[in-house]
Length: 335
Image (cartoon, rainbow, N blue to C red; front, side, top):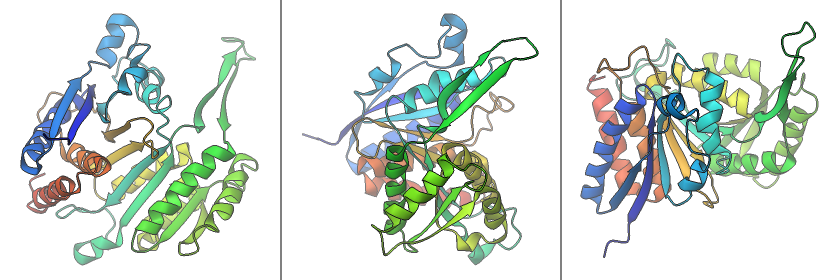
């Protein structure tokens, strides 16, 4: 009896998510046959169309429903006629936070056949850009604390309060050091803005220094987030693994994808490293309504995302096979 059977929750969501996720599932189902495991995908129609019908992007017990699965494959969320803060908080964050997917991982490298906008990163030099960005994914600037009062009056107040806990920083920092340790260069850069944000970000710096003592074989440095954007652009070869807060890593990872040639082919994993809850895997390109329905949405980001999901599930042979296929396709200029 085949014990390698995986229950996968499939949430295509909005826009091109409904195009690239089916393509990814085709590849995943073929890999299952080739590598000897089986799949039980279950589809969920959560997204803005459901919101327009029922005033909710997902059921109130949606995150609870996800707990029975081994992994979640997510497409995108967002539509031009629904405010972005409603869609983000109503679906993606409504899954990530209750399932404690606190480590968002975004690998970045220049795939064969892809042209970086950085002029020196061509040919063999393209290997100088090979990064992994770890983003704290459940608190910080996206903790959801805040509100509005005196609405519509001249004295109206709106607050979004960043929340940094020692426990939250320690666990994502330890995850980042472990990841850096597993990579050949054993190099980690901690990114904050602790010169200006003197409480939460200083705590980040202090925790990084504390955790670093557990990893004497990992070299690490720290950068202010604005200086990091310059370093990523001018000295990409000095970077390997990066860890940053929810907001800062969100921005830096999009810059990283662009520097690698295309945000449209970049993957993401939202991990619960302890595996108490399922992790969620998504391409980062968003719903891209400007190209929805035109038949030109690129599924490479979804393929790479599935490759990360396969690694997480322990199907390394299938993950390696898929990565080779991705590199062959991009190398043959079939994008």
